[in-house]
Image (cartoon, rainbow over all chains, first blue to last red; front, side, top):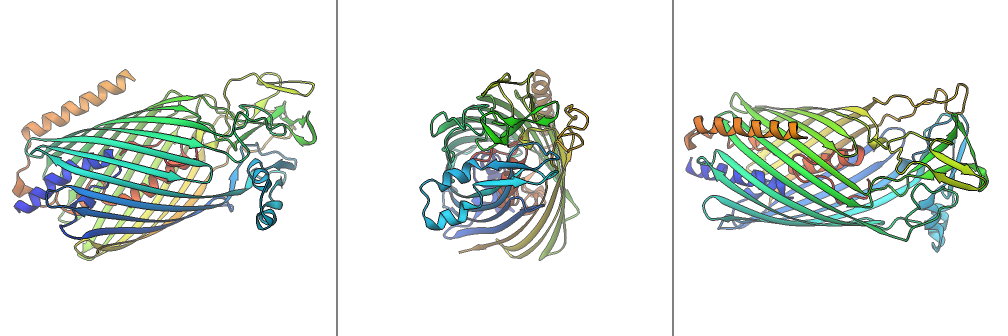
Length: 456
Length: 73
């Protein structure tokens, strides 16, 4: 029992520090002298042949005699499919030049020429969502973390991560401290994370709100820095109830745009012929503010039911200075009728308001000035990225787990995600190209995950 | 913003108050010590989901440091 208590105290201390850092709480509880291995494979697919991803991950944890712990993790992510380019759905056919595919064609070898030749430009049928078919990327993430007790009541943790994609690199480092109080019934924690990102888009950094056909650039790369701070309290309320409250602040500065996203420019709902390219309609690249401050409040409760079942209820409120406010509710029931079998039904509800610069398209005259061949945006920021729109989403999932013995488990999980449009419709002229067309594409996605954990 | 901060502080005060009167003794921790009672019992699963939602929604983080390591903004 003493051992259990020691482990629980450790767990409580680590729970918060680990959540503040990159490491997982229970992983730090691996026994002396061997590694705990957690591995999983994720397959993610969006409806309508959009993005597909395959993502294997492996995590190694080793705990040492002084209760310090090391965690190493590697994630590989392979992405393919079609991604919305940001243009509005219209009842006429639209042809686009893919900035990323065109850039790949420059200096590409024969094999790549063949692969991307058909994707340099693409035509979208009337009524269809404009999807860029050249979406393809892979991501590798390496992370490491170290947790160390400090005196009787403190736990320190430090960690770092490196992530690399074809056009994006991210480096981050974090440090957190946790203090146990009230005989390990309370843990206070404080953590800081610093992140440095570099983006080098195919085709360069497009000029903010510049036209797609001209494709003027502002250099080849840009950077972003993010500082996150988090304060957390973990509290054992009674024998069956543990709660955690986290308060987070985030400041992001630098290049926040999606360099591949464009907006349609219309005249009373009708597409406009590009003054610099008579065979194409007019589109401009997006632009977002260079700074973003976010504040989040996260509250999680776990209730033990009977001797093996658990209810997990989480709620998050987030607000930022882009006018995005969101609420997230997450419910999981851990039902364990047998020692070697459990089921976890899961439900998540999410809702967000739109960013103040979200626009499904831009109007010529009031938002974009067209004089001769000069196209000048009259707004400072605009993006049609559906991630910045108003929507709600439901996720339904279920997981089956088979604990084989201590620290050995096989699991399989299925999740289904569906968004609902909550935007007010932006006015278009009756009978125009955009009249009657959806201004937001509701995303549907599902994913399956298989996992195996063991000692090595 | 101020209202949110004051509410958070109130919640923290309630938690602190509860802890003062309801200390759980070591021999009462049998249920709390079970793996399914951990705050994040499946860290790899949480990381997958955080990354998916970070890529498709405007919010991230809360549970821990969110986002990052992805050019998908």
